[in-house]
Length: 430
Image (cartoon, rainbow, N blue to C red; front, top):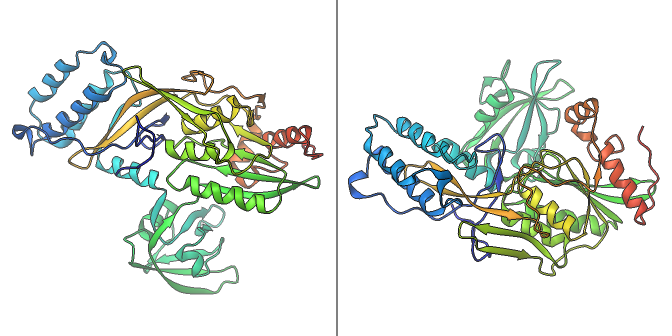
């Protein structure tokens, strides 16, 4: 899987998080690796040698954390392995010596999950599912826009009684989702019950669905028009969705924007660059430095879609590509950052698919904000610090529809700031 972008040194850089670690990680997808030596082919050792070669060639620290990396190869290839899983475990132990949680091996299922996540697509019918805890019934939380589900008229709150004749009684949302997913072009039949008590069957043909990563709305605050945009991750469709959001809100004559990056763990680098260029007319976006101390500065290119006032909301889970975008807009004084300190992830990884369908992520570079700030393990400090109470965090987590409303203290502060900048929005937190 290759992502063609235009940055000369890291021509397929991406940033991603969560898929291979519980903390934010940074990645880029690379071309296939060279074949293993003939004597190793069809052996678990072939995968070990492929992975070792990649780390040897690309790892950001040429001293390998003071590890004798040549000796590590000898040790890996001198052992006998009775299974691929045993070889995988040996490789993981070898990588742990580097002291870098972001340089990691992925088994085939983990690697497939990673590539699917970055694509921002799924094969299915376009339903978000939930279990009504009160009635213990499976129901539609939300049909995804432009999906087979929406075209069939399914609605939020519809109860799903059966999937291809199998009762959903006691079924989790995750188990139901597995039954509903499938190959594009195949069908699944759902037995649906509406609030009226009427039930009916609907046959849906599975399709490739673009997952929404950008949600936006026009907020009327004190007679003023605020464009609220929430970006949940930087996948392959994020830039196009952001472009549509900005243009749609501009057409509705908004007077300012609030960009919500809270909880956004990162994503594709080229998506963060494209999105930064939508808000910035000129200036540096990010600088990367590789193992040979070569640096590359990526710039805005005078393609901004708007110059309206902008506030950004961040928190401790805003990481990686979120921090690139936040740092670019903050350092260029294009936006005011509100919330709490960000995660502090300033490393870039390459991701390589291996010959058995597994993969490896390897740290290859460090990045800095336009002002040269190293945010690693420190994060970005907001211009205006607003910390939520534990009660406020619980409420916004359990009722996400309150995000970007006057029940959201960080959003309220953003609106107050925009008022002070010339957008008259008298509000009060209640």
